Length: 168
Length: 200
Picture 1 (cartoon, rainbow over the protein chains, first blue to last red):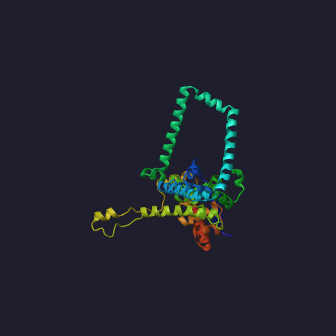
Picture 2 (spheres, rainbow over the protein chains, first blue to last red):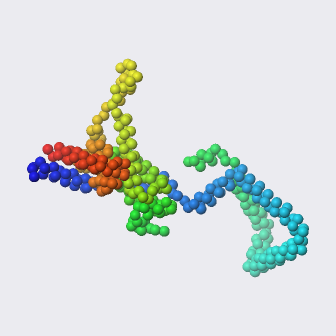
Picture 3 (cartoon, rainbow over the protein chains, first blue to last red):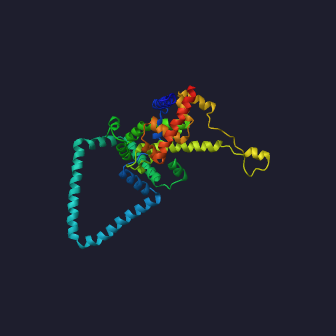
């Protein structure tokens, strides 16, 4: 083996040693968080479906269409049920009395629970003074107003600013 | 729900499957596994820390947002290295175009127009800043790697720094196996010559 060959193999070994000893470099702190902030995690299919259905139904025109369809269904059921009830009056009365009996029993149970547990007494005491009565009326009025505002927000027509906010 | 420690014993494919199911912990495990190799590769390609971090970040964002398109028969490491390498090579090509020497636009008629449309010539030697950076990075071998052609650089880094197989490097670079072997052989030859120059 000549000196030149020895030199070459030495150098080759040196190159390989130097390469394998190169340190593994790390990015700066917070790299993972910066990446994760821009990664969209997949969501379960059921959640995606529910959100899509919700978003679809909350579009004002679709919400009105759904409400109309619902009202039509109820009305159609009543219209169809009317003649049938008229034709089967005995059966209808029997059914109605059965339902009324159960509803009455349930109402009675709730009322007796209210009396036994003291809820009715507490309500009576609370409504006893004029000031408390006004406080109850005011709370109910605020709750109605909040519900109305909520409905307004849900059913309002989308604006350009909403679209922009959604795309950001 | 597996813990971060449980995930460390799993293979890349299993981790990707968990990530596809929406487990954030699996995403973080992939990041933990590959942030250093990807950043090291990109940094040694572009030799600029801030830029390398940007390119590595873009690589991860692209990969993690496209996990649905990942095919399990392909190695995950090959996929991520391929995207990182492409990002680095694209950047180097753009930088080369920006500084490529031209004798001015062919439509230029006056000397002023020629001067205005001509671009400055640059050679492949390191700028003083790059030289300083490579000295900070440490060794002569870092400087020698910086002088290699980008394709040779990728091959030698993946083979001898990251310990990847020739077949995987061929996958990463979309090159025939023989070409990869030739590139690595030539790169080692150039590194040897450079180190020999330093010794004399």
